[in-house]
Image (cartoon, rainbow, N blue to C red; front, side):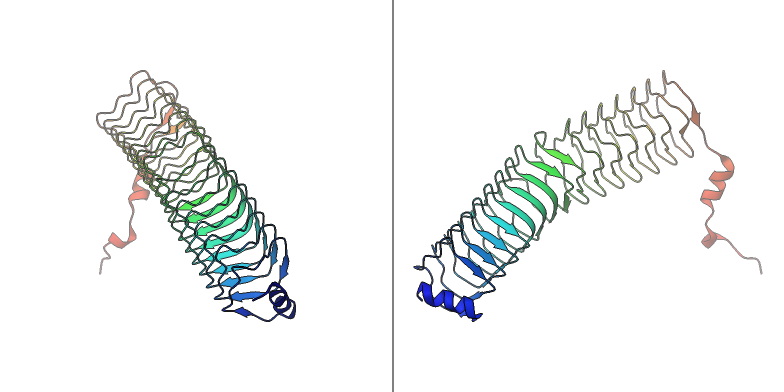
Length: 355
């Protein structure tokens, strides 16, 4: 197909189907409201072009040059885009679904209000890109490169990031659901307001990070390092923090209800006004920890060390603390209230009615 024929089809709104466009120079063109289906765009040149409300479906596009392209409210479906260049591109309100983007280059791209659904993004580079309000759903992210990227309001599901390049990336208000970051050193990142619920962070190093208002609901943080983190109002409910190190962490107003902190180290931590309801703290170290105004109803502190811990109206209602060390503690605690204990244990299903 000739360039003039292609442009005429676009102007008339006629779908371009099963055409060979690999030799057509589309550099810098403005293409609007066009549907391109099952066409050969291998090594095609669209650098600097603007594609507005354009749909590319089932096209062969390996090696296509989309450098600096503007993709506005467009769709790419089932396209082979392995090794394609999107460097410096702008993607806005654009959807890429079922595409092979292995090794694609999105370096320095600006991506906003866009979706990647069930795409192969292994070894794709988003280095120094800026992303705002982006969803990456059910994609293969093995070896993805996010070095120095600035990412805000990102949602990613089932993201395996164990081999991802993340150095210098800045994340703000992200949701990584069921992600895997096990064994990673994330100390060069910014993770403010991160939602990592149900994620695997086994042995992950988060030391010194700002985790303010972050969510680790039901996450696996066994043997993780969170030493010196700053994280007011973090949510660790039902998380597995066995043998994790949180020494010197600042986690005021955080919630550890139902979490497993057995063998964890919270020495010198600040967990004031925190909630530890029914938390497993067996063998946990709270040496010199500040627990002022914190609530630990029904927590298990058996074998825990609270040497030099400071309390202030700290609620220890219903706590079990067999073998726990309280040497050198200071401040005041609220002990078990028997009437409340009885009320809490009441289960109407166990009441035997007299006949």
